[in-house]
Image (cartoon, rainbow, N blue to C red; front, side, top):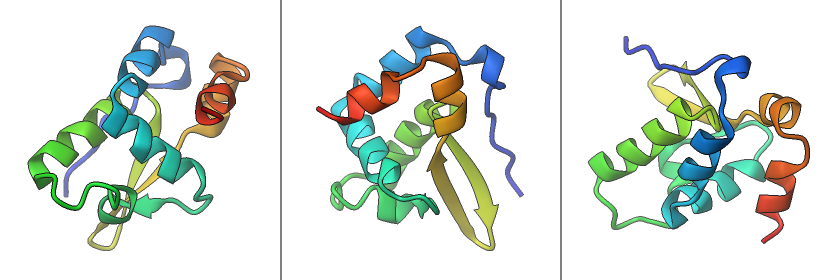
Length: 102
């Protein structure tokens, strides 16, 4: 089983978050996840991009994970992704809400 790297709350940086969300594809993925309290698998979260190669989507999810924007957990054979709302709010109050409003 693969293990995913997730930075601790204290290691989430503003530069990392802004870089991750600066890409239109990743921003769209996060907006989809932001509206889903229970999280979504990679296919559901990436639904706006059905023609994108899986390897490319995987890379986008990796950047989001490693920047601390999302948390990925295994549930059976699926990878369930959720936005790290509490961690991001603790580090950068109001930032994600402001970004999601655009």
